[in-house]
Length: 70
Image 1 (cartoon, rainbow, N blue to C red):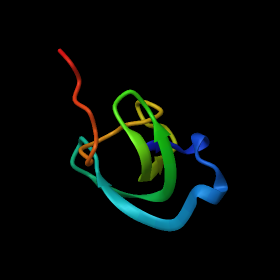
Image 2: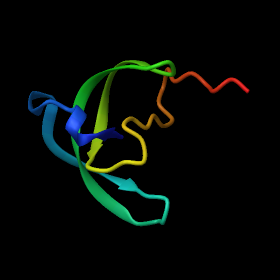
Image 3: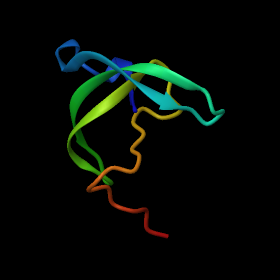
Image 4: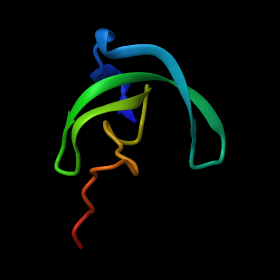
């Protein structure tokens, strides 16, 4: 999940994917292909774009993600 304002128009795919939210509702969100560079994941990924996510970038369970050190 990425905050929509951080995604360039040319990165948008024109398609939508559904996401199950914490409250159990399922909503469609536009998708984009972006290059992420974070401490936990670096690479090109298909993301969902949300207007007001709780954080600017939310990384889920995808191959290559590093775990949080205790």
